[in-house]
Length: 218
Image (cartoon, rainbow, N blue to C red; front, side):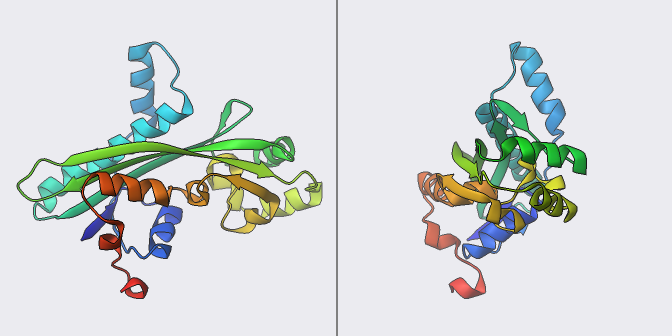
């Protein structure tokens, strides 16, 4: 069965590959800030993280489903969309982008616990049939070591890794050594919850082993 990842995230692609799935990838044409701003203005409130990530995951997946309908009408498989946000002390922390912000963030997070929210949208797409969707949000708590030194923070930030990731950390690369605990599906912190994707696929009548198409899974 074909699998299309509605994302160009290297972390999400790697995660699926490690799970035995070699997906096609398409970049969704979604202006994330505009989508959220319009919805918040219409409803007169700020979306909490769990709603924020779900709205964007669903929009991304739906956009790719629509583009497949035009460019690849014979597509028979599933489309996966995702979005993630990290919240610490009730504040959403996006990509720090610059070193000073990343350093200050790590000094603040040291010894604390934040929540990684991950939205998931899965569409079952079949030729000649309406697409069907299932969606869910997963969350995982991330606890940071309390003995991280200023030199370690500076060295980690100097690698550039934390500058382009939400929350300024990774759990599956250099940042993993500074994380002492993950409460929840660990893959959620990487980019998507594999257990959640499995459940959503099953809701749509697709057994997870049907998606194993990578060479090492055959």
